[in-house]
Image 1 (spheres, helix red, strand yellow):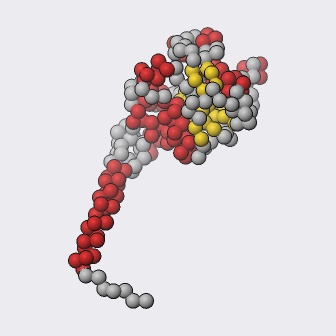
Image 2: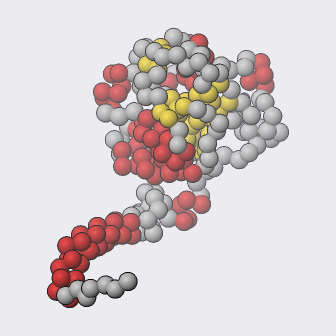
Image 3: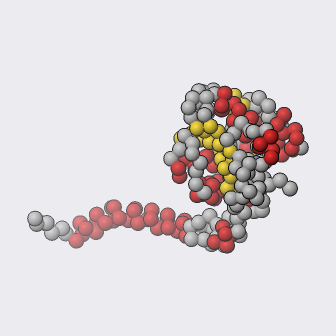
Amino acid sequence: MRFEPVESSAVNERLSNLTRPVLNICTTWLQQLMSRSCVLCDAPTMGTWACKECASELPYLTRARCAVCAVPLASGATCGACLERPPAFDRIVAVLAYDFPVDALIHAFKYGGRLALAPALGEVFAAAGAPAADVLVPMPLAPRRLRERGFNQALELARYLSRRHGMRILVDACRRVLDTPPQAALPWRERARNVRRAFVCDRALNGLRVAVVDDVVTTGATLNEIARTLREAGAVSVVGWVLARTLPR
Ligand SMILES: [Zn+2]
Ligand SMILES: [Zn+2]
C-alpha cells in the first residue's frame, strides 16, 4: 500500500485545526491538576485533595468496633446496646471518626456552604470500599432545611459513591415529612423520640438491599427510623453507609 505524500503546509494546517485545541485542553487540565492544594494545610499537592502528611493523619476507624453500630469495641462483636435493642438497620459502615480534622471539614462543607469540599470528602468516602447493596438512598433533608442550605450533603456524597461503585441512587425514594429540631441540639436520650415518623417512603423497595448514605452518624436514631420506614416499604436489608461516626465520650 502506498500513501500519497501530503504537503507540509497541509499537515501544519491539520495540526493547528485538531491538535492545538486538544493540546490546550490537556495543558489546562494538567495545570489544574498540578495546582490543587491540600484542603487542610494549603500545601501544593500532585492533584490529590490532601497532602501526604494530612491524608496519613486522618482518624480512620479501626476494625475493633461493634459489628452493628460501629462504636469502638475491643472484641469487634456486638455491643450491649445493640444486643438489648437490635436496631432496624443491619449495620453501620463508617469510614472515619468524627474527630479533628474531619469534624471541621464536614462542618465547613455543611454549614459553611463550602460545596467545593465535596470532591475531597467524596474521594475519601468512596475509596474505602462499599457494603453489599443494590441501591443508595441519600438521607433526606426536610424541605425547609434543603432550601436554607441549597444542597443535601448526603446526596452530594452519594454521587461519588455511585460513580465509583456503579450503584444506583434513588433520590426520591424517601421524603422527610417532619421538620424536627437538629439532632445535634438534643440530649442523646431524646433523639429517638425526635425523629419518630419523620420519613415517608413513596415507592416499593421489594427485595432491595438499601444503603442509606449520610455524612455523620451519632446515636443512630435517625438511621434507625429511616431503616424502619425502608423495611416497611419492602427493603430486605438496610445498611447505614456513613463518612464519619461520632465516638461516645
Ligand atoms: Zn496538608
Ligand atoms: Zn452496637
